[in-house]
Length: 243
Image (cartoon, rainbow, N blue to C red; front, side):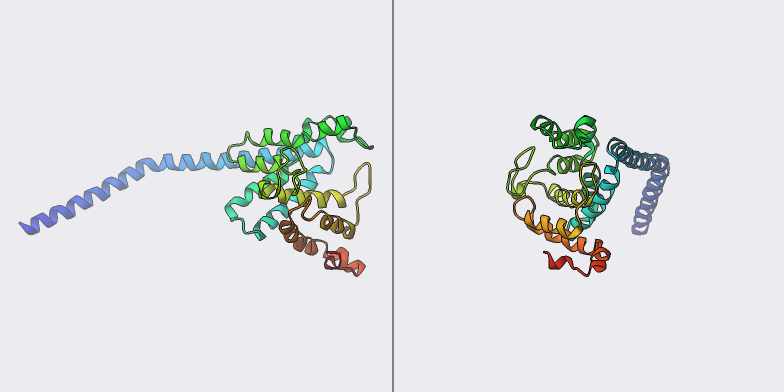
């Protein structure tokens, strides 16, 4: 009787395993379809982000290339600051599309070769809010949209649009603020020639603790030294000499 009971249990276990296998087999096409749809969604989101970057480049020549460079720097800084790999995408997208809101700024203001009036500056200063309003529509990019919204905040609290101060400013925004400022300073614009790297570094350091987060700035300067090593080697100068 005991053996019979034991055989029954074994038989029941075998039957259960067979039922589970049959269930998995019947559901596997659905699982594969869900996975396929998820991959398609990721592909579509990536394509849309790239398309927006292209659109921004068409709106303001050099901005697309500028943003691509910033995205790489932002990820490297975030990684140095200990951000988990699975979260780096938020920083990358924020740096890539932080200026997407400029498509809402009239060309007469965006490309004006002379100083903006107070009214024009007020319109230009709306572009982070426009960027937020676009990026927040992407599922899963809520954090990136906030990084873009606050990338013109100042560490001492005098920036816009929220007048946030210190660590009230999202870390991603503090990173984008620094890499954006550095790249803007060394890039040629229709109304001025780009600064040399030594002067750009000097100005970044002058803003440490006021415009920029000192700790994040130090992390970026470590990267900048590697990025422009060739430039400084050619002049016989080291970034550390101007920090």
